[in-house]
Image (cartoon, rainbow, N blue to C red; front, side, top):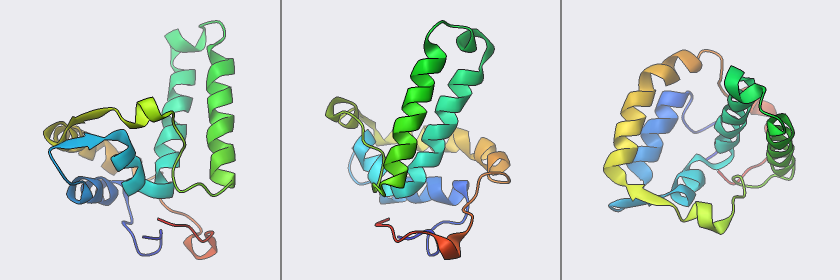
Length: 131
C-alpha cells in the first residue's frame, strides 16, 4: 500500500493496523510490517520526545544515545527500508490482540490532535516504496 492509496491520517492508519493483524497474539514485527514506511515517523517522534522531557534530557549520555538512534532510523529511511530494523528479540515481542485494540482506542483522541500536524506530505513526489 503506498501513501497515495493508503490511510490519509493517523487514526485511519491505526484502525487499518488493528483490522489487518491476524491471530490472538500480535508481534511488534506484525505491527511494523503493517505500518511500513509510515512507522518511521512515530519512532522518530518518540525518540525526540524522550530526549526533550525534562528529567530525561539532563541525564548524562542520554542525548548521545537518542541522537544515535535518530541517526540510525534516518539512515534506514534514506536506504528505503520497508520498516525500521530492530533486533530480532524486540521484533518477536508479542502481546494479546485485545491489548493492541485497547491501546489504539486510547490513542485515537491523541492521534486526532497529532494528525493535524503529522500527515503525509509530498505524496506525489514520494519514492517508490513497498508499503
